Length: 352
Image (cartoon, rainbow, N blue to C red):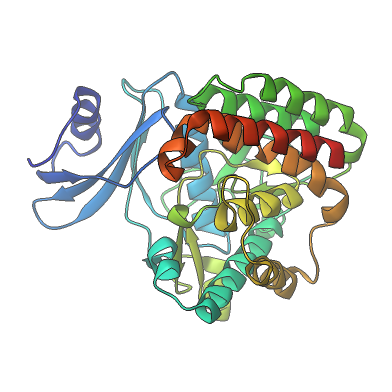
């Protein structure tokens, strides 16, 4: 077998694919999530798969991702990879999936003209709106497979073709509490303590705005809408999209998904798709993303403008908690980035 293979990866490969010969492992690109290790798998017969293992006691992440992948594959408007094997309680915890359909958005976007980029972003906005159309009775943390379904599931169907449950198990909680839990997850995987006080400042902001946040609608959120997690695809593999024959978007890495405010997912998507450390992308691109959302949903999420400032405060943790990663990415001194991140957080807090 070519490529580096850690002992946990070897054990997970043996458990997930006991009867298959692995030719080599491949890299999957940079990741800022130190809680996982992910590799591409090329089998001797040419088939491919992806294998993700939890490096820490994070089995709930993989249990969540397995459940949401099955749910969206069975009922959702987006294409997602097929789950090939999984053992969230194993040693190590692992999740193996087939490759995502379509072409990676990152490569397509980098090679495109501005006009094509706008069209791609419009498709992403439409896909997000389609996902957010799946509404639930309450907000909550997804903890695994179960019987809870949203409005996307006609007749309350909860079983897949092989009898596996395709509903969700959701621990209901006020939206502000769910949002606070996502902040704690960011703290868990953060790679820098230089701006550790930012977590407490953001938590205080969320708590101070509970009344505003807890009135938000409850929808299925992806939780990590970035270019590497998206693929441009046809409708195959997404039942709702296939029914209309439309092209769409496929998404991977659902381990941060939850039931929450769709405005938060849209704010995060715009930031991760278009913005840098302390600069924003061209407004025409943000407008294209929002236009695609409006095309599908008839408007932006209810309360978007009122709650957006809070979510922009929360988004700062994607800088503060990973400032050491940013200094490598931007090739700038860490002290400069720390100073700029601190000033930016204060400005965002003042805007709430």
